[in-house]
Structure formats: structure tokens, C-alpha cells
Amino acid sequence: YDYDGARGGGGGGQGCELVAVISDPNAPREYLPAPPMRKGHQPSPVWNYLMRFAPANHKGHNIECFVIVRGEDGIPHPCGCTIKWGGPSSGTANLLTHLKKHPEEHQECLHASRHSSV
Image (cartoon, rainbow, N blue to C red; front, top):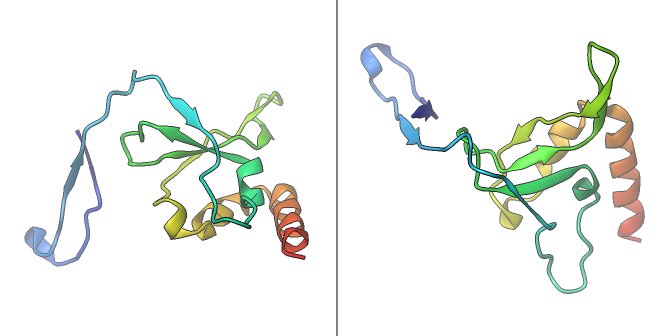
């Protein structure tokens, strides 16, 4: 069990909500294609750097970042950060927020986004 989402304040647990999320850490991850878009729309360029997966991990995250970063050991590897995403109706703002951790890719994404709408 992992308890996420403790909210509210006050001592003694008043106003807190605990949500139990059960997940098998050994469950294989299935990577999914970019989400379907409305007719006439292009997928967001953010999907060049991120991929959806199922099942969601123990934190409820269902997106993984594949931007290549250089670790402390100097060896390049995928970022591997996971992000919670609510689906197409929630937009990509929180995904772009993560991409800000990778300035070059973030700028490329913004540039591609501007040109895709022209």
C-alpha cells in the first residue's frame, strides 16, 4: 500500500483524506501510443519526449519521460521520471512543466508547437 493524497491541515488528522493505491511493482509496463486527438488536430509535440504507460505505478503516475540525460556517472540514459496525467481532457500543461527540467527539449517542444498551429 502507498498512501498518496493526504490533504488538509489541522492536528490529529482532521480534514485529511488518505487514498490507498495498490500496485504490483513487478507488473510489466505496456507503453501506449500518443492519445487520440480531435479530428483535424495534431498530437502535441510533448509526446516526442514522453510516453504513456499502463498500468499506472504506485503513485498513480502513467507518463514516463524519455529525454536523454547524463547521469552523475557521465553515462547518458533516459530521464525516467514519471508524471501523473489525467488524460486528453486534462491537457498537457503539467507535462510541459516537467519538460522545463530539460530546457533544450522544452524549447524545441514550444517551437514545434508554435509551428504546428500555423
